[in-house]
Length: 134
Ligand code: CO
Image 1 (spheres, rainbow, N blue to C red):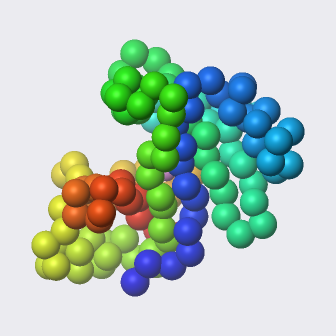
Image 2: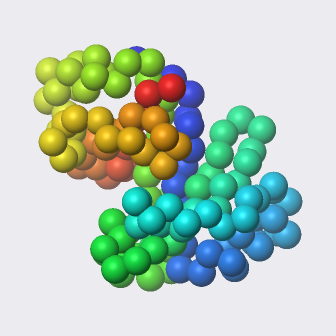
């Protein structure tokens, strides 16, 4: 059911320092920082040959990643995003197997303008999973 890894998201305490590490130390192509006020994050995209890494930093007062950074002050892996062809079909199959879909269960428009859903980390070995319909 799941397809390619679309991206791995990493919350970082210092976006400029993290972007510099990915470009200068790891030798990757990184974007300029992009504010996504609707999502409460500023993102730097790291473009790799086979996927993307998204470096995330809280933006605004109600950022959904502020609590994560509070618990993990040096940063950490936040979620992995898998592509699916039909997000509602995927949701229904996951629910039928007992997995918990976060929120209302209705897909929302994610950071890339495509429908996304998140799955409860306790149902997937402690990893927050994002599904994105491609
Ligand atoms: Co994501």
